[in-house]
Image 1: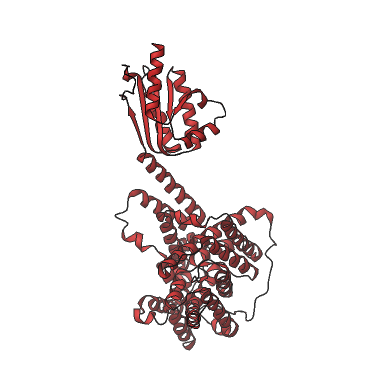
Image 2: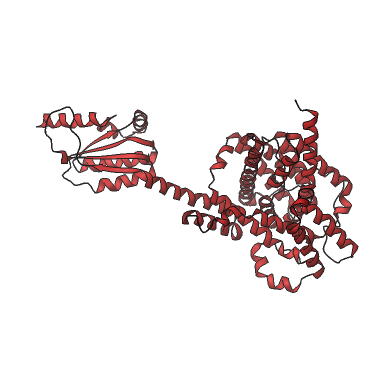
Length: 529
């Protein structure tokens, strides 16, 4: 039951979030290449449906830096083909919903921090570099590389009026006192004040241009060429992954602030529905926006109503104030976005960069460079791969594989040659990363050893690779005339036997403890003696 007081706080939180979202939505729309109206409707549609169907009560969703960068990549890849771009956005929403269906939401939190750090800082650098041309009043380049290579030519074409108002905007964004920014967002101050200044001085600078009034038409994004299917799927997956990561990280921030628990898979359903519907109206996609969510919470927002109010407020602005918004200089938006780019940089990692270990630094820098100069999805994929390999190496180093030559005697009071028994004890993980180490130890065993006892009852896990390596070990030792005995937990033994297609493990003895194994060996020696 929603009380009147909660409803009032939700309305206030939603309106405040809309005020903050307005300049960012306009800026992200322009930066994407789809236009300011596409950014506004992305904030309206995604903000409403993600709040309605999502799993985080206070989340405010809309266009974000990472999603805008990928959308701009899609528009550059298919120039003039808006249907294909909207198909990419539509599919990305469906993929997000599929993530929720297979319950992948909870696994996002296992992405290593250096990967997230490198990716977010890379996106921040991309936004900053791509805004250099608008900041100087020059037409934008379609890529980072072209922007950098043509920088000197861009400098020579600088529009001084645009440079002045962009610099004023950037100054407002960075220098607005904390007490003021707690009342009015610097982006809104810059948007209104610098736009008015430009209009009052009649400056000759590029502007947003005409923004359509009224509601957009519904278009089904199904008209595309199957020749481009591979690139379409790749970009769709990229958007889906980034949108999911971005949203769920923001959900974690909201949880910490409100002391609540979000539903990750439900949140992905809301984000997926919102982004799919965005494509029907020619809007750009987005994700949960951290800054807007924090402002909503600080302004009193507690339920989904705040997110929906935020969207309705933006809709009213579009319907009644679009002519005014058309006069906003692009240089103003570039100044706002450059500050956004700096805010996205991961200062937490940068501050401790000299103290972090070399492995984490390697992952972060690799992801950062790949994000900026190659591809966002490749950057995340390579980063996760490197981090996983390093984690596997670390786990394998932590697994103890000890060799023991002198075995204690069992209850049989008989002298046997202890040097003829060789025991290998495994404590930790027995998987493909450590099984190879076990194999190496086996190869170094002297030929005069008669019995090999492999004790892995304390192994936490046993994967398929390890089982196959154990098969090879049995085969090698049998050919060397050695007797092989395993000591294993019941569940590991059950797994081994289920996968024993060639009856290799049925030819050896498997015990549950070392005493039974030694008793067996001693008894065998008595009989043979």
